[in-house]
Amino acid sequence: MKRIQYALFLFAITVLSFNCQKQYSGTGSGTTTIENNLPSPIIATLQGNIKDETGQPAAGVQIKAGSKTATTDASGYFRIIKADLDKNASVVSAEKPGYFKGLRTFNATSGVNQVVIKLLKKTMAGSIDAGTGGNVTLSNGAQVTLRANGVIKENDGSVYTGSINVYATYIDPSASDIRETIPGSLMGNDKDNKRVSLVSFGMMAVTLESASGEKLQIASGSSATLTSPIPLSVQSIAPATISLWYVDEQTGLWKEEGMATKTGTDYVGQVKHFSFWNSDFSAPSVTLSLTIKNGKGLPVVYASVMITSADSGHAYSNTDSLGQVRGLVPSNENLVLKVIDQCGTPIYSKNIGPFDQNTNLGDIVIESTTSSIVTLQGKLLDCNNAPVTNGYAIIYIGNIQRYANTDASGNYATTAVICSGSATTCMILGIDDGNTQQGLITNVSISSPVTDAGNISACGTSAAEFVNYNLDGTAYELSKPGTDSLFAFSTQGPAQSFTTSIMGYKLTDGINFSFIDNGATGIFAISNLFIMGMNNTGLVQPFNVTVTSYPQSSGEFYEGTFSGQFRDSADLTSLHTIKGSFRVRKY
Image (cartoon, rainbow, N blue to C red; front, top):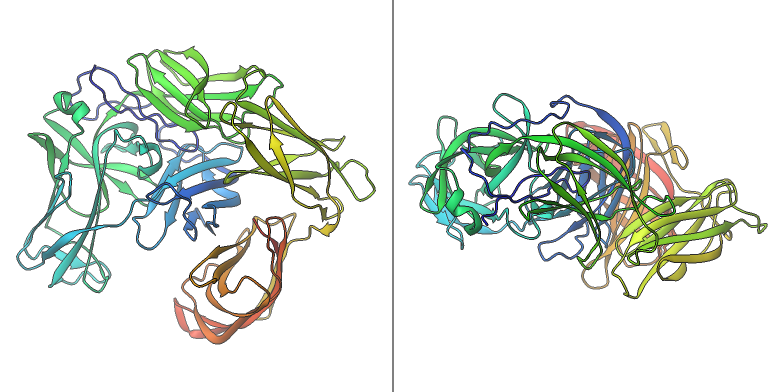
């Protein structure tokens, strides 16, 4: 059985792969029946986890979704409330020095959208003299070939002379981690601007830099040659020619541009600029929507979903906070829906399809006796030992956080998918929004099928959060409820140092600053400031933060004041003055 990777675009991860035995021309003739490529805006919460190339949490990664930004904490976690998303194609980017820009494109839902991105290490494949041209070869045989005098400086378009550092990585579409590493997703717009799903025969990430780190690009009228190995599993059915696609980094969508020719076990094609490049054809698809719940009617939250084709292919995604899954699936094929536990073991299976039109399956119910699906529940009590009717529990499991609102009796409940029979713990923090109080973190051992944490106090510490500041004489207040996001964390650096980030956003108001500290209270120099859309600000020293309370555990608060002056990189003639105070919970 030959294996081909199909794209199945479900919410969140969006990169899902199918396999089947078919012959394709590679002309990109399949189109989807999704609502074309028209925008469908939605405001929703976005959170996620960023990993490094080894699969470990990546801290300090700069996240951007629409106009909102965030930074990952020590667990690689980020959260943006009221993000500007799109039901048909949302994009989130992840940037960290030493790595290619990470991108994830997904179909946003009304729940908390969970994404996972595994960053690709930016490795130098070799250097080429700009005057003579030449090529570099990766360990798997992939090649980048540049023409003589065919490279310019990206910032001003001037001809570049000198040594060109070529950073390149091959992305294998048959790799087990492709759903996390793929740039964007396998969703694109073809040469006729129609939204299509793609089948990949190999991808490459390429950037060019000078020896001093200047960004370089292919000159207008010139081109470069990419040689991309075809995965062994599909070499015998790879078409003679195939469309080339590149990622539009603004939308996260692949765009069709050019063709590649099969030469031996490689695809060879000409490209006019560097980005992520992909050898693909498009496949007919429809939009599939469904919601997964347990026997108690609760959404199965952030569960790994696998859909298998009749030809033994498979695909993965995650549910959102409401158990929803939505995206593109191959049309007119018999499919099997499976839910997978944290150890990769299927815990539920159901035959679905074939589908010849957009379909909503409604609720898929998994009985509560399934041992890997745990209901987490309890009751929050206020300072008078009365039920908290306006509050929520923050539940920390691994590197993912869940928020469960209380009902009129102070009860809360959510779900988690774990490895059957494994020993797992969680931390629960009770928040009383009505009285602006919170309790202490409670550690709870998880047991299946129901973990009842009992009564948890949401009393003892003020739950007030804010970042208030005065910029050039105008006051701004960011405080819950009503703010888009308040977020703070510290990541450990060398020699017992920490980098702490404080951020808050409300509509167009927003501030994000960071400083290096010693893990305790004190006065520290602010090293980075992003405020009100002004980025790359030039700080005028001294520009300090005074930390009066430094948390040692999740749920405690950073408190302090800050003041200083800065110049916006876009207008160096204007000097801005800012001062403010903050109290933000550590995550």
